[in-house]
Length: 201
Length: 203
Image (cartoon, rainbow over all chains, first blue to last red; front, side, top):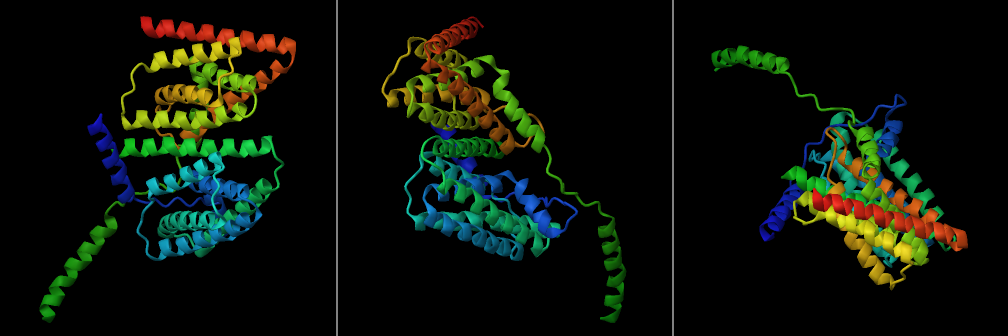
């Protein structure tokens, strides 16, 4: 049992530090780089889930927090994207990206009381992380800066709409539905961590 | 020096030509297995009847208990179920999985039938323990070529929707006739659990 746990730990540590090859996967919409970037966010579940979870969490924490996250997340994502594209480490860091949305899901499910600066810092870290991965995967595929702008714009839009909706929700069932959504995201992340560990073995 | 350079040039040209002819591994530019993974994940919880009845029982019991259990149980269940799935994927052994799933249907069905109202934490712990069995058994069967993340998402959503079905059915217990139907549903779930327990023990 102990040996198994140790093996699992080693497997998780290995996938945390071992970057996986990033296969370029920018979808081509035919409308140009900007729209390709928007589509990229829509078809990249790990990115989409972290944005949804963070937007829900920011909304749960109130208007001031939501306003901070609406700008902090896309800006950090953009900065991370530039870093990833410039110093392309060709990596997808699946464990860290999974951890980021799983943790955000847990925070939503528990409706955790976190100070606004804490939420903003979390948004910046998650944005940088996912942005770096985006930049590193999109740049070798020949994606332009417009694609990154498309990704960031979509994140801004999604975060603004979702967090605004959540802040305006009446008490009762709608708030519970948000927490349930958080628990689903967290559960998906937990299962994904298991898959990653299994794949690494 | 110049002679050396001239000798080196054909080698460089040859090398460059060979490099050009070298077949380069084409990294897929297309996301593959997304739909297959998501749909398979959505369909998976519905494919096992023991799983279906237990999920509905969670919702029914939550509705019988009323707030806050009505939402605490469906929030706790997916997370603990995923934890069970994680244990299975990590290879941590959990004995008597099939028996645990059958017992979950029996106990949860009986709770609905008898309208048991324990403290919230007791209900949450009970549901969490059963969730581990369900997650362990069902959360690790990814079809070949499927996207693991979308499969997991589909699996979790389907489970949550089954809870919702249970909650909606359970809301009928507000009326006298509805209460009888809900209790009968609980009894049916418990009987189904007994059948699966018998099958798990005999097989």
